[in-house]
Image (cartoon, rainbow, N blue to C red; front, side, top):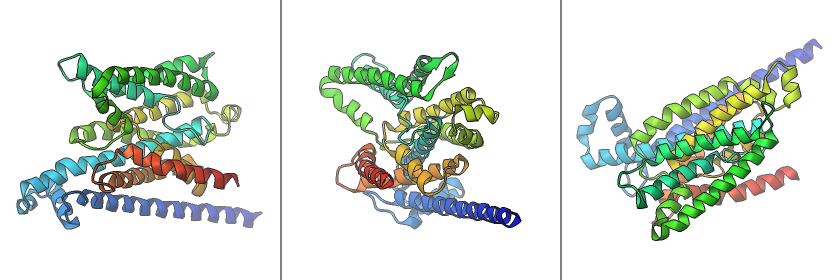
Length: 351
C-alpha cells in the first residue's frame, strides 16, 4: 500500500515535470515563430533586423537610426500588430473552446456553439452596412461586433434559463435558434448590399490584415485577464465535467460556475471575433487534441490551449500571406486544413 502511494506520487511529479517542459518548449517555439513571421513577407527582412527594430522601439531608440523609416514602419506598425493579434485571437479562441467543451460536456463544442460569434458577426455586418448606405459618420466595427456578441449572450441565457438554472441542452438549443435568426439577418443585409457585398463577405471570412496597435491595446488586456480567470477557476471546471449532481455533492454550485464561465468564454470570443472576423476550427481542434494527447485537467489544458492556439493561428496567417500572390483570409486557411484534419482525428478515435 505504501509502495503504491509512493508510485502515485512519483507519477504525479513526472507528469508535472513533463507538462512544465512541454509548456516551456511550446512557449519558446511560439516566440521564435512570431519573430520569424514578422521577418517574412513581400519585403523580406532578416531576423536580426526585426530583432533590432523591436529592441529599438522597446528599449534603445538609437538602434533605429541604422534603418530606413519605411523599414521601421513595415516592422513596427504593420507586421508586429498583425502577428500579436493573430497570437491573441488564436489563444482566446482555443481557451474559449476548452471552456465550452467542459461546460457543455461535449467534445464537439467550440466558441461558436451558443451563437456568440454569429451575434458579433451580425453587429459587424450591420455596422458595415450602415457605413456604406445610411450614415455619413463611420460607425466603428469592433465595438459594434462586441455589442452584438454580448446582446446575443444575454438573449441565449434568457431563453435557456429554466427555474433559475441553465442546462447544457437548453443552452445549445437556444444558441442554435438565436444563431439561425442572426444568420438570416446577415444574409438579408448581404442581399441588400448589392455590389458592395464584398466588404461584408471579406470580413465574415476572417482576416488579420490591416490590424493596428489600437486593436492590440484593446484586445490584449481583455483576452489575457479572461484566460487568467479561466485558469484560476479550473478546478471547479474539472468538477463540472463530472455532472451536475456530482458537482453539488462536492460543494460546487453548477449554476454559478456555468454563468461565470459562460460570461468569461463569451467575452473572450466576442473580442476575438470583433477583431478578426469569424475564424473557425481553432477553438475546436486545439483543445480536442490536447485533451486527447496530454491531459483532461483544465488547469493544464487552458495554458497549453492558449499557447497552441496562438501558434496555430500565427502559422495559418503565414500561409495566408505567403501561399499565393493574393492574400487568402486566414479563416479560409484554418477551415481548409482544420476540417479534414478533424475528420481524420474523429475516425481514428472512433476506431
